[in-house]
Image 1 (tube, protein in one colour):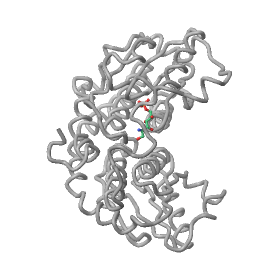
Image 2 (cartoon, protein in one colour):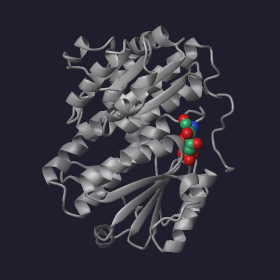
Image 3 (cartoon, protein in one colour):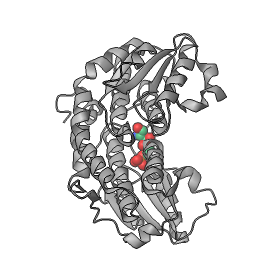
Image 4 (cartoon, helix red, strand yellow):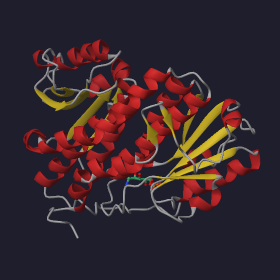
Length: 366
Ligand code: M6R
């Protein structure tokens, strides 16, 4: 059932070219820049009345939610908060019927996320569940269910379900932006065209996996690993660190580039690998200056950068390449590189990749 792959994780990383496509399939019409989400039980008028979005999730799904915040705020102009399921359920949130709650859970069974979304009912707010499992518990607790179509994920490390969740968040954010009439139609069309190009671009990254493997092997015996990114790439740095620590047992942390000076720089020393997500965008120059700060501490910098970026090579030790896309869509591509980096690091260390110690695929107890 591993279809010739050594591990389910590697198989599932490779399936992303298809699962991303399957998740948006039938939903995008680039001719008029609209998206079609029939399963969404919210009228356009209700969308216009949303004052705040509250995203609730755990683990990798939480990192998808953090990307979602940038999308809903940048595209749809809706203030968005993201909360950890286990924190939200024991807090006293300020909620009312103008808040839209979105639970993200690939399994649909995460106890804390379920409890949190159930508690939202008492505030009369509309709820949406984004899940990969048809008929899972969360589907009974939300007003609308948006299914990602990643197919079954066996590896404990979430990979294809994460990129599928991201796709659903893009589709939803574009839907809201168009319903509010604040997204330029040409921009919407372009974004949909770019979304459709993502599966082919993921395939390109997969085709170059040996370069990522070489890099992973170089640093596989290190004790610590850091990941930095800014803006949308900040949650991708968190996700890169989560993936690495979970399957390779290397101590890994993700930071926002601007936070380095506020503490993390103290940990960076001679030879420490630091992955910097430096794809082109409005914070590119800013991440470059972070890279210089890191290099000044003799760290080894691995940059995730665009194929045509020739400048970056001057400042870093390794460059892992991703095709160029719309700035907002770039997490879909950078993530695949970080998944492969984690996978090949764990492989070089001889770890139990599909079943890491102490972790379960779905966390049904708190
Ligand atoms: O099923 P869920 O998406 O609710 O699971 C949440 C987390 O347990 C999960 O994303 C976990 O962090 C991943 N296995 C990490 O790869």
